[in-house]
Image (cartoon, rainbow, N blue to C red):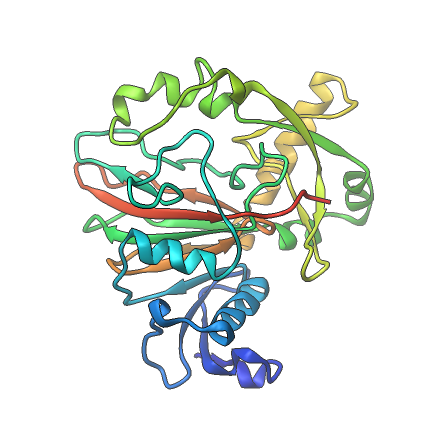
Amino acid sequence: MSTTAAHERGSDREMLDIRPLAGALGAELWAAGGGPLDVTTLDAAGAAAIREALCAHHVVVIREQQMDAADVACFGRRFGELERHPYLGGTSEEPEVVPVIKEPHETVNFGGGWHSEMSFLECPPMATALYAVEVPSFGGDTLFANQQAAYTGLSDTMKRFAEGLSAVHSAARQYGRRGDSDRYAGQRSSMKVQVSDEAHAQLKHPVVRTHPETGAKALYVNRAFTETISGMHRHESKALLEMLWSHAVGEQFTCRVRWEPGTLTMWDNRSVQHYALNDYHGQRRHMLRVTIAGDRPR
């Protein structure tokens, strides 16, 4: 059953028909009359409505779009400054728009593991928008996990303990020398990936971050980019991270997005992790990805 935003808070979302995907997070967005939105004609009020829905539902899915790289970039700019990925090449026309492609002969996909978008940066992206150009006949879905719900699901004792911790993040395992991109280069040749020594740089973020727009607290550790808990022995850090990583992506915190050609999905990197499933071998998947600049986790 759909939920009109007029019943939620009488805000800008009254122009949207919001259809939840799962109990934990996620919603499809349609025009208030039930038809598809046209994000290529989005005005300031429409962008505000989508942003409000994003903060409330963490992942928003907009179907039946017709977009090229310029349209994806334009959509992203409605929500903030776009940023270039430090290790992935963009299109020639829109350098901030990254083509995410897996060809039928390739065996390794991009984003195939739970992670929070570029948490190795001092200011990780606020949000990501991903548009489906071509999708396989089956498979290729994306999973999302609500990290605010994951934080809430901890015991009060663990919440207090985690709030006092910080963790070291790095891109080394993904984009450093002998990292995944280096080892799997021949199996993911369609992606323009730069392997760099700079990926080994480390920085700290809080284990529990506060959303700058809603004030909600969320876990902020992920398998791809979080290396250690600061101030702990290695075995202590490993044990705690393993527990938090597993807890954070529990089934009760997740939703699943099934892609169709023309689907545009946007997610809030301040409150979710995501996982691109690699279950469509022998088929092509072509997406366009853009990230919107964020602030330093606090």
